Length: 254
Ligand code: ADP
Image (cartoon, rainbow, N blue to C red; front, side, top):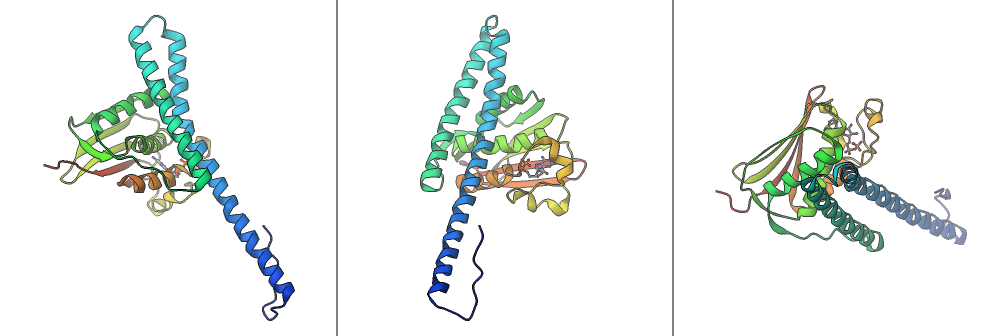
C-alpha cells in the first residue's frame, strides 16, 4: 500500500489527484486489515470445536460399537459442538458481510452445569487431566455459547503452556460468579501481562513457538467478555503458572 509523497506547498489538480489516490490506499488498507483479522479469528475459533469433534469421532470408531454409554455421550458431544460451529459460522458470515457487532443472546443459566459439560468435552478433545471443583447452584445471566467460547480460549492456553493437570474452579464471592482456570505452566512475566491482550502479541516467540498460536486468543477473549458482560483477569508468576479468571455478575446474590 504505497502512498504518493505530496509536496506541502502546492495544491493544484495534480496534488488533488494524488491526495485522492492516497485516501483510496488508506481505505484499501483498512479493509485489507479487517479481512485478515476476520480470517484469523475464524480459523482460531473453528479449530477448538473441530478438535473436540475429531476426538469423539475417534472414540466412536474404536469403542462406539461395544459401549452404549460412551456412544450416547460421544454423539451428544459431537452434536452440541456441531451446533456451536454452525452458530459460529453464521455469526462469522454476518460479521464478514456487515462488519456488525456480535449478536448476543442473554439467558439465565446454570454456570456449574455449563462449565461441567465444557470441561468434559475439553478433557476428551485435548486428552488432558482436568480437576473440576464447583459449587452446585451458581446462576448467571449471560450468552451461554459465547461464554463457552471464552472458556475454551482460556482452557486452550492453560493446555498449551503447561503440562501438568489443569484445575478449574467455579465459585461465588459476594457479587460475582467466578470461574478460575489454574495451570502450573511456564507463566507470563509481570512486564508482559498487560500486553498479552494485544493482537498478535506472544511472550518470547522462541519459548512459545512450538505451541503454534498466533497471539489472537486473548484479544478475542476480551472482545467476547465485553460483549457478554464478563470480565477477565490474569494472574501469573513466571515459571510457576497462570490463573485466568472469568467474572460474571451473580443473578441472585445472597
Ligand atoms: P496464542 O495463540 O499465542 O496462545 P493468546 O492471545 O491466547 O495467543 O496469548 C498470547 C500470549 O500470552 C501467548 O503467546 C503466551 O505467550 C501468553 N500466554 C497466554 N496464556 C498463557 C498461559 N496460560 N501460560 C503462559 N503463557 C500464556
